[in-house]
Structures are given as structure tokens and as C-alpha cells.
Image 1 (cartoon, helix red, strand yellow):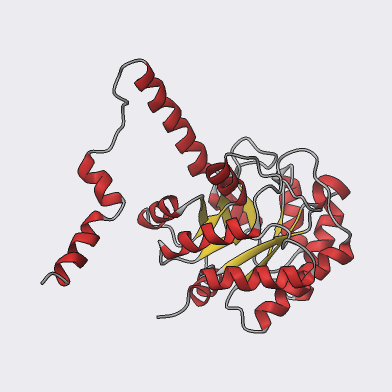
Image 2 (image 1 turned 180 degrees about the horizontal axis):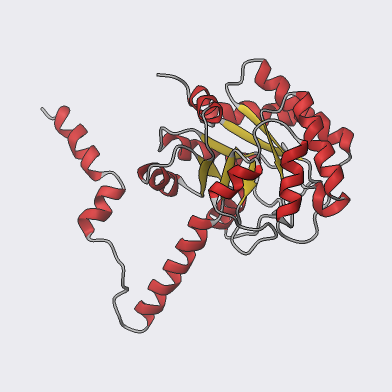
Length: 285
């Protein structure tokens, strides 16, 4: 069977835009695959929120993210993208991060140019490193890939919010020259900005569709027409799960059974009891 990285390359080479929901744990990743999506994204925002109940402000560590990623990739067979933040240090840290994500099972890692500690791209207080340091991170990531790490490199810039759109575009062009497989210009603030980026930067590009964020949320066919190859929805499942849990807790507090609850057999199926029972039969003596 082809590696997940090879399968991801094939998906990116095929016609059409790819829709990529975000996950925060193994269960949400499995639901993405179960729903028929071809790829998924481990969001740092979502993992920080779900695992630590803390904001995406650089508080979660490399070790925590790669451990969560190992569980996520182990639960699915589809290619998964992993949020690698800033690479967690200098060039050697970046290389270690890339190798660690590859060993965890990711098909692609995202490395960004924010100043550590980083923060969610749609929140306030962002700062970016110099263009030279940003290039160093991507060069190190590409070197790790070229040395044998079976993983693609997605280079992200947050320069739009700090230094303007043209600098962000220039960085994306540089990242492609350095060998990045995919570019991601975070948080353009209009359709016109999205078009300009896609017209000026070649290669696969990702659009970040955060509900009520800074970037217009557009339907996939419009994103494809603009020039994007991937539409990521990093927080939709975390968002929906928080709302569902709050509603369930409110019902319990009022002495009512929550609505929209799975039958117990369906819940058992979702977490894998039927497959476990089949395996158990095989080794019964």
C-alpha cells in the first residue's frame, strides 16, 4: 500500500479542490474519515483547547502535539496534516519537529513564521520573524524532507497582519523557491486579497475557513475558481462539540435527558467495539 504521503501527492495532483476538516483527537479524526473525507488536519488551536483547555498562544509543547498526532494518525488511514507551529526553535529544532511528525504518521507538516510564542492566526497580538529567519525554518524543514522524512512541507506566513499583503506574498514565493510543497497565506481579509495571493504565487495553496474569522468563508467551488487547492475547516468540529456538550450539560442540570443522543449500540460502534469483538473471536481458544 502506498504511504499516506504518496497518497496525498496524488490527491494534490488530481483535479478539483480538497476539503479538509480539522480534528483535535483520535475520535474526531476517525469521524472525518468515516464521513468520507480524503484528508484531515490536526489543528494546534483545537488540540490546545481540547487537551489543555488553554488558548492557542504557544502554551502547548512539541511533545504534547506529536503525542496527540501519533494517536490521531493511528486512528485513520487517510493522509493527515499536522500543525507544527514555529518548529519549536532554531533550524535543528525544526528538523527534529519534521522528523517527529513524519514518524508519528503525518503526510504533511505546517511550519509558520510567527515569533514564538505563536498564537492563532485570527487573533490579536501576532508578530513574525524576519524574512531571513522565516526562510531558515522552511529551508530546514525541506532539508529534513529531502534527507528522507516521508512528509510534505506546508509553509505558512502570518505576515499579512503585521507587515502587509505584499510582504506575505513575497514570503510565500520565497518558500516555494526553497522547496515548500504547499503555501498558506494566513488571514487575508477580502476576496480581492485572496485572488491576489493566488495569482501571484504558484503551486498548491490552502484557504483557512474559520467561522467568523478574518477571512471570508466561501464555498469550495468559489475557492477553487480563485486558485486554492485545499479548503481547511480547522475549528468546525471543536466548535460543534463544545456547543453540543454545553447543551447536553444544560439539559442535565435542568433534570432533562439531552436530545440528539446516540443509541448505546451506535456509540459502541463509533468507538470500535464491533471490530474489537471480531478480533477477539479470531484469537479465542
